[in-house]
Length: 129
Image (cartoon, rainbow, N blue to C red; front, side, top):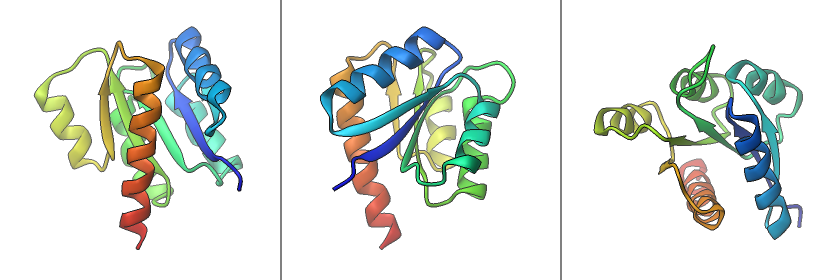
């Protein structure tokens, strides 16, 4: 069975690469990293087999919330998890309202991110049914 594919989106390149590497090292998922919302949309056009996107909220250009909305409209089969270092109840509510499957606050342990991705993929599978 092929591992589920996860796209990490964060304008902090080192963090995005570290998260992707950490996820890949565990072998449960295949993770890729891009560094902006614009890059994420391009990547998804070229790689529609992505199962889940994990995006930061605060980024230059397209914000994570805008990316979330665009993914939900252009690629409704792809689940989205939102991560942020600026946790406010209004942001969490907005992310969930726009269709985020989960919300994770930085800093977090890579194992916590993996568990969040597992839960989000289960929710996504249930929604598809």
